[in-house]
Length: 343
Image (cartoon, rainbow, N blue to C red; front, side, top):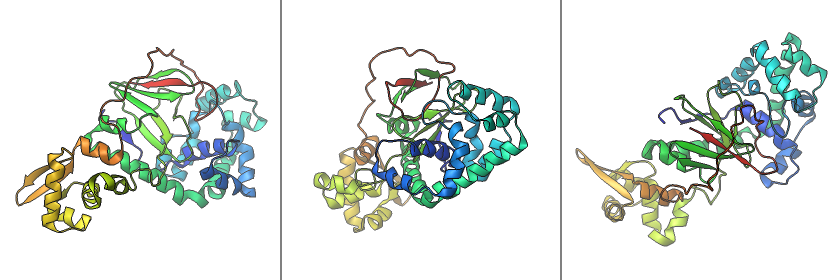
């Protein structure tokens, strides 16, 4: 549990793969429709090499999304180009079992230097022409999701953070269940889990196929907007009153009474009075530290503020998924979904 964490930065290679899949989706989605129209000629050239490696459904090679991608585009590309030839051949052979591949992919599978350099150039061109123009919006959405999860983890612990993913992910200790295109069990074996928020991931999470790699689960980042935690005070004002809702919202970060007063825009005596009412309702806890009183949200207060339902998520219909050691993976897609159990 202590090794479960949220990725600190957007991963440009995961966004490359998942955005390319979304580029070929036919379903309309306002957030993505404008982005699809902004493809430029340079991006189209990169697509000719990348598209066969990143089909819109099912399996795509793990070497395209190395862990080093969390360090930035160039770190990720360097890791892709340094993939051992044995891994290239194994994963591209598996890809060929499900998709027809051009001759260039055969050269890539043999680790030819020229083919690898062309792949690196295509990844840079795609990012520069297709992703970079909208990268501030991509990064903003991912950062908003990351901040929400990590603040919950810091205040209330990892189990409560995992419950914020409901209904996409369902935490039933010691198992995390995810809707997934295939039935699959992933055993962490004490390694922990890296959760990666993604702008372009849609509907279902996606994971690496090779279970010898560090476990990663990529999931759709929460959308920014008035229905999320960006404006909890607006939702709670009719229930608590505008001032008390502002006081509760200010305690997303633990504060002393004087800090709370400044943040909520009220006097110290008023902040103390509102804190007393919220404490008696079980929404906050207060502790004295020398000459100051420090206020923090309780679990109940956090649930009220974020909109997460109190208590454990009810378990889904009972079934035992089959283990698929070499199942294809995907983010989105039609047809019935299975489950992914992470334990």
